[in-house]
Structures are given as structure tokens and as C-alpha cells.
Image (cartoon, rainbow, N blue to C red; front, side, top):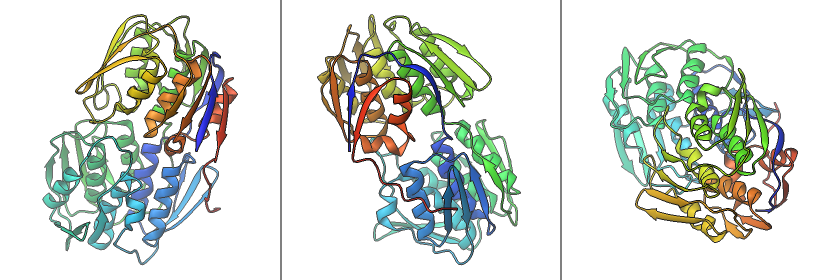
Length: 424
């Protein structure tokens, strides 16, 4: 699909964020740890959520969605093998391995796919499962794990991987004894998953710190749980307000979750007004230059690096972005250059010499955040842009174009993504 944007209009108004995709996906996987029905509220209507729903159905789980509520009935029996055609679409599919090991003692999952932004190997997940007593083999393109009973263990992660922390945490809930994850990821989505598991009867403590302790329990029960707002979506709309020199209030956001982004927006010259669940941005002029280094939470999020590059392309000086989380995540820089941006890539660094204006062009979005970046640049550019590959955007932003239109953007879409959610 593609998106035609006629730029040059400051965005003004109020936009409301949906629930966090990166919280919804692991929580949906975690729901199969219980045999009971769970209902998850505030789930965004996204392609990745649909893919996770299809993944769960493929292993025997009943999944129904109405509005932003998802009803998950794991039931019996579950199948232990995930289909390649779904796993290759989204790497979060690998999060079913920990819960399947708990429920069945065996799991077979192909190597995951997703956005083309680097290798992002799953070796840390497997290291954790092995420490807990699982036998791991690679057969026919599948990673297969087997265990008679998972045992609690002390696991040190070489890097604070979000996915590995989530998968090991879910496995630890059903293990015998205590599991401790050292150098754990500290993202808000980790805390949300822990809170969800605890609402089912798990005993997880320390989430949000580098040391998470999980006391295994014999049984979990179904629950009803509402997930946190999406901090990446909130950040993107704040940057959209800034890049168009508009005035935008973002609602349903937890300001502490976007603290690092707010700091850099202030540094760029934006005026911010924080509420308990909202942030308003007013950008009076071209941004001042800013240096950014992406880091695991609470550092600057890698998922906001691309949208922020669109803002810095209009800067009043030279900015530097250092990408330390994922390699190959500057694909959007070349497309921005086609609009007149001055960007030089040196290894994992992007040197951005700000220019007074960009002009519309035909552009190609190669991944989710690149699509958001190019859309924001097109909103602020002079003239018309057509962005191809915008189906990537709907992996992470629900109603993206609709929300921007409500803020005054001039956007047309072609070949809108299919919706096939079952009714609750």
C-alpha cells in the first residue's frame, strides 16, 4: 500500500494513544500459561496483534477480539509446533516458546522474522531455557526445546534483551523453584507483563530493575487485565507536532515512560506541558541541533530514532545520532536525502546537517519505524510525497493516517490493510 501526503501544514489538536503493542504481544503469549480464559483490554488494532492472534489459533488457542478487548481461551489440548509462515512475519512469535515449555514440556518454533533491522538473535532466550533444564536442538529449520520439568535457575543476560527477559520470565513462572534474571531489561512493557502474570497468580518481583526474581507456582488462573499506553506511538505524535511546528496534545501517555524523548525534545527547543496522562508540545521554530545515543530503557529508545531523524533534518545545525541497539537501522536516511536532507552515515552513526526545508518525493518505507519517519518528514516538507510500503506502519500504529488527519494532515491512502478480527 502507499500513502500520499501533501505537506507544509502545522499539526494542531488532540490525539489519543492506544495500548502498547510491545506489551500486548508478550501478554497475549503469556495468557496461554493458564488453562483458563483471560481477557486483555486496551489492545491496539494492529497487524502484529492479528499475527499473534493467528499464531495462538494455530496451536489450538481460541482468540476473539471485540473493539480493543481480546478474549483468550487456551483450553486443551495445545499443539507444540508453531507454523513457519506466521513466525517468519513477526519475531515476537518466538515468545510462545516459554509458555509452551511450561504447558507441554516441548516446543518447536522456526527462527523468527520481522523488520529487517539486523540479526537480533534468539540465543539469549535459548541460554535461559537451557539453564532451566531444557534440551535445545535445531532440526529442519526449527528450534526445538524439550524438558521433563523446568527448574529454577540464576540466569545472566549478556545484554538486557527485552524478548529474552520476557520469555525466560514466563518460563520461570511455571518452573520448579526460584528463577533469577540478572541484567534483565527494564522497559515498562516488562513491568506490564510481570503485573499481568501476577494478576494470574504468579510471583514475580523486581520487574523494572536489572534483577527479576520469579518464584515458580503450580497453577495460574485466568484474569482480566488492561495494558499500558504505547510510549513509542506517543513519542511519534509528539515528534510529528514538533517537525511540523505545530501544537499537539497527546493523551493516554505516561510521561515517565517517555522521559528520555521529552528531554531531547526540550533540548531541540520544543515547549512541553506535562499532565498526569498527557503531554502537549508546541514547537515555535526550527529545532536546535541535538545529539542522541540509542540505549536500552531508560535510555533513548531505538524505535524513536527514525522519527526523530526527520525532525533533526530540519535543524539549525549539525546533529549526531548513534545507534547502539540494532545494526542496519538507518535505511530511512537515504530516503530522507532524496527529499533534500543532508545526512552522512558512518558505521553506526548518522551525521545530520539541518536544512531549512525538504521537498516532496516518491519514497520507499522499508520497515515500521522508517515508515513513520518518512511520513513525518513528508508532513513537514513542501509539496506532495508518495510513500510506498506503508503497510509496515500498520504493524505498530493503529489508525495512523486517520489520527494525523484529525490533526489537520492532508493524507490519502491506497489499498488499506485488511481487517479480519473475530468477534468476541
